[in-house]
Image 1 (tube, rainbow, N blue to C red):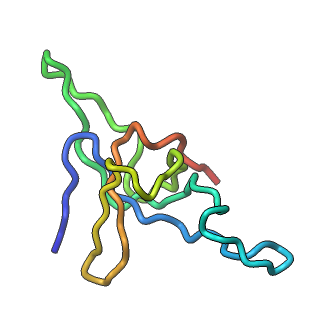
Image 2 (cartoon, rainbow, N blue to C red; image 1 turned 180 degrees about the vertical axis):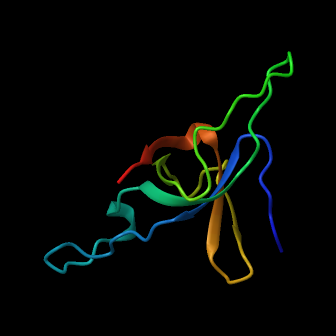
Length: 102
């Protein structure tokens, strides 16, 4: 199944979070930081002003981004599994705080 985002939606794969400290101690789920880095897999075409002029997207497929703080019970959190079983998330472009440049 192939999913193509619409409007200002962005499909991302979240980067894995560290489950242990540098000293090797286990970090419980509740104590882990919820601000996440992610890789952008697909981007919608963007929004359009009423006069028909497009609003360009600030991110593109392949970018590594910093997302807003995530809450697992967030009603706006849209997620699905792709054919390989990987968990992917769909966010609005407003949820992207920054593009990580290396």
